[in-house]
Structure formats: structure tokens, C-alpha cells
Length: 201
Image (cartoon, rainbow, N blue to C red; front, side, top):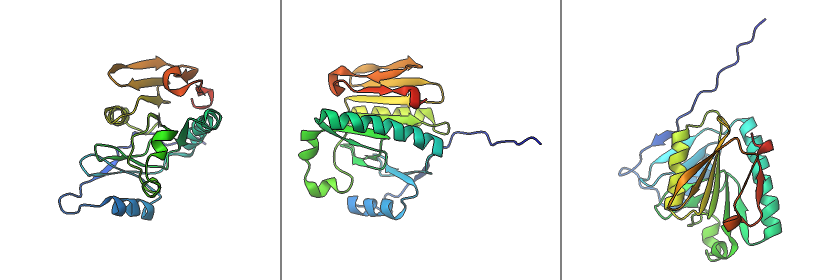
């Protein structure tokens, strides 16, 4: 008996336009996300809600490994704080984004009032990682990476598991593309952090 498994197809996020009919405050948007925690919800600079279903188990396992490596280094390095995919940040352009992993210099993080850190902190991380699953649209992720850079991110890694490629984003520099690298590092910002990709591919 032959079993036909479904083929993974790209999923385009649902985009809900609210304005001008509804204008959610920062607090209201945060509460909306808490009430709908089964979904990955972001808000773009135009105030539209971008809704994605949860990731597949395999992608989440790979992302867990990725975040784990960043966590170990962050604890050893102690110059910054790390974040996983559940946290959101309010960027200078008004968008609220949730990278798969992020890192912020400790002094920048601690400069934010404690009350604001409890929700979607008003800061753009210095370092972000996005991990593309089989169902993620590459163009959408590339646009998101460029948005991070435009809003203050100093280094971004877009890891494309589907094609085994990594897109490296930096301000004022053309995007660098690596084919099937074994590891990633950046001495300028991340000081000795090495991401082993063998458990991510």
C-alpha cells in the first residue's frame, strides 16, 4: 500500500487591514496577541496585522537548537541579552516583529524602562536570525530582514533550510549569500559566537 504524503507548499501570511476603522493602541495589540497566542502575530509599519499559523514540529526543533546555541554564548559572553521567537519588538517604524532569535546589547536593553520591557519593547535588536521553513515565502522573509536593517539591526542571518543557503544582512552593504555553510560567525558584533549549522540543516 502506497501512502501519499502531502507536499509542503509555501504559506502566505494572512494580512488584516484595520485602519482607519480600528486603531489598536500598543496595549490593545499586546492583549490581542495574548488572546490569540496559538498564532504568530506581527504588525507591519502600515498597522496591518500579519498572522501566521504555528511552525511545524521539525522547524521548531531546529529553531530550538539555534536559540540554545545563542543562549549558551550569551550567558558566557554576558555583554547582551538573548531572545527566542515568542518575543516581540516595536521597531522605530512602528512595526512589531518577532524574529526567530535576537540579541541586544545589555546596556541598550537596560536603558528601556522596566514597564516597557514587559510587553513589546520599543527597540530594534542589534542581531536577528530568521529560520526559513519549507512553507515560508523567501521574499517575505527577505523583506523582513531588510526592515530590521533599515530600523537599526547591525547583523541579520536569514537561514534558508529549503535551499541550504544563508543570507547575511548588514547596514550599507550588499547582502552576502553563503551556500551550505557549516557554521556562521561575526567577530565585529558577536565576539566568538559560532553557530553550528549541522543541527539546523
